Length: 359
Image (cartoon, rainbow, N blue to C red; front, top):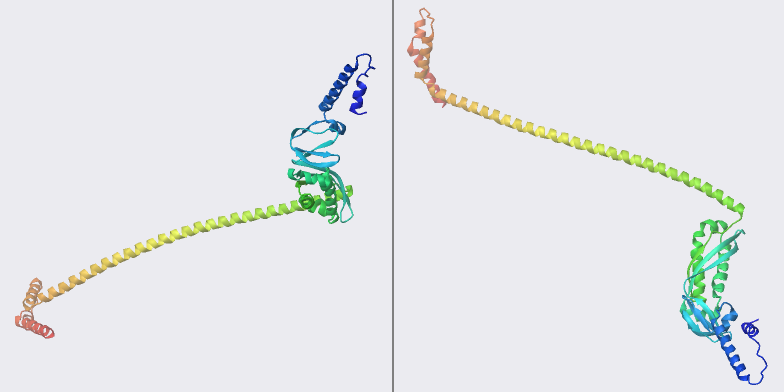
């Protein structure tokens, strides 16, 4: 029973006209008509029937209003807010043009090795550009996302699984599935539905058979043990390398200190050597000066003695020597040897004559 039938059932049946009641019946009919129109305007668009009967409708924020008349898509697109349309003839749908997330659940697929796995949830964040709303709805309808997202993600997941093994899908290449799905969806949307932009794809870990999952867990445990052993080995190697570097550093430090100490000792020895050389030089110079002075004195004394070596001086010295002698010898020859002045004078004269000839 539609709204008009409900209104007719609820409204009191007009009594048969009697006498002058024709005008009141017409007024009552017009009143009921106005009430019916007001009810149809005020009733919210909660169902397709009510939406078709309503005149005033609302387009929420982030959406645009799209209209059909007689099943034909109109090129009129309205923005957020209140708008009016022709009841019964025009159909209205709000289309979201902001970011939306389509959740695709339960996607079964078979791997290259024939193992059946199931992706429980894949989220596709997408957006329909406002400028392409009319073309997208005209080509693919209001449920355009079923064609290019829900159905397409099923197809791409099955294509990916059939080309890869379980090891690749579940472990090795799982981190690449998001980007591969995004690129595959965006490539077809760009070609056939350019108004749809794929922002991102989030893929959850697929569920695999329990026996295979246990095997993977055991493999992961073994791999973890191996990695732990490798890390321990690396830590030991790093510790050994650290100790080696410390030892080398200590040895270099000691060598450097020893070198500095050796250089210091060498500098001290060199300083002592230079001091000895200076002292030796001073000693040699002093001794040379003393020797030169002694030589000069001797020369001068010799020259003085030579000047003093005259016959008169020798005779004087001879006499002084004889005078100082306290012993007296007696004999026949002694007076002739000692006291003969002529013999001594002749000897001295001969000596002077030889020196003059030599000169």
